[in-house]
Image (cartoon, rainbow, N blue to C red; front, side, top):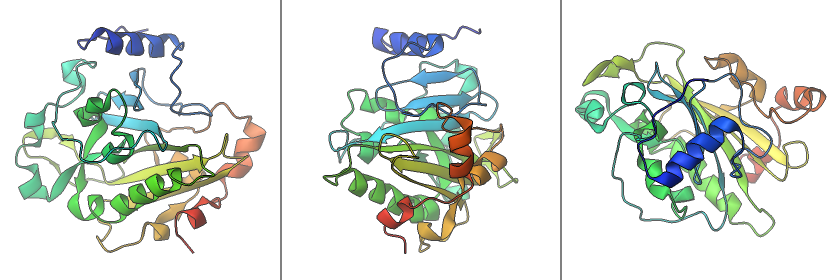
Amino acid sequence: MKIYRFLGLLPSLFLGLACAAGTSTIDNCEVGCPTGGSAQTLVREAYTLNNNSRRKFANWVAYKITKASQASGRSRSWKRDPDLPAADTLAPAAYKGASTALTVDRGHQAPLAGLGASADWQTLNYLSNITPQESGLNQGAWARLEDKERALADRSDVTAVWSVTGPLFERHIATLPAAPDVEIPSGYWKIIFIGSSPDKGEYAAFLLDQATPKSASFCDYQVTVEEIEQRTHPALSFWSALPPEITQGLKTHKGTLAKELGCS
């Protein structure tokens, strides 16, 4: 197993090593984290992240939103992730000129508002948790989906909202002006469930293109989990702790949670 440098404080070191050893008591996935990614997985209180050293973005980020995890008004202070080798992630300078040239925002994968009360909330601003997301998508349908996640977590009958999200690279869109070897994602996906397990609660999956109009409804972009598995690269597999005979049926249906998120 490759050993990575950990440059953060001792808690970050512990979390990284615990993740590598599979002994962390922090669980941001509930029914198993996605498989098929890289060996670079970081476990933090706010989220669990699997890094793609070639893309410089996460393959996936898993998190849970609760009533206690939310906080508004947190600052955005972008930093390179100190718990990854410098060559495997981005520094703030990589985004220079991107907003003007590409009309993109620095989009959180694990959301700042939904997880801002976490003790390590500053790690949400590490660029390993950020991707260049088209402004119309970031401020439109994606933002409204995140709003619904928080609203769902606030319900008295919901203990936690479990989510995993990540980028797609299905076609060339553009590269970062200040980092011309770094391609921006062509789209994003998110899988959400409530309850102790997708088969015991409700779930939904969404896949949105970078070019999604700002006024669009995320409800129009619901897909099956199987479709996301087929379109991710590297190919990911979800809900790894559940028996295959259970997940096979779940992954081929869209699920019913979309109705709880305001979709008809």
